[in-house]
Length: 73
Image (cartoon, rainbow, N blue to C red; front, side, top):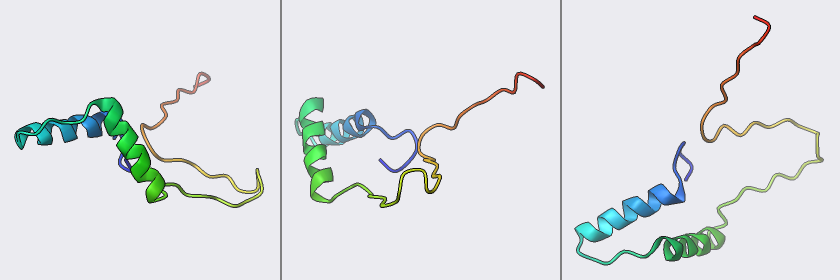
């Protein structure tokens, strides 16, 4: 999930493909996401930032980049 454009849907598709290759029945998407949620809670897949609001500017570089056009130029 830390890589760009990686979603739970993509992870489920990859998991289901591998399960079928091993001749196993894969979990449905909803069950897969429930298991992922429990995994994320167990391993605390979050990062707490303890600061006063507005004290520091941070940029989230995850996902697609923003495309901007300067209307004046």
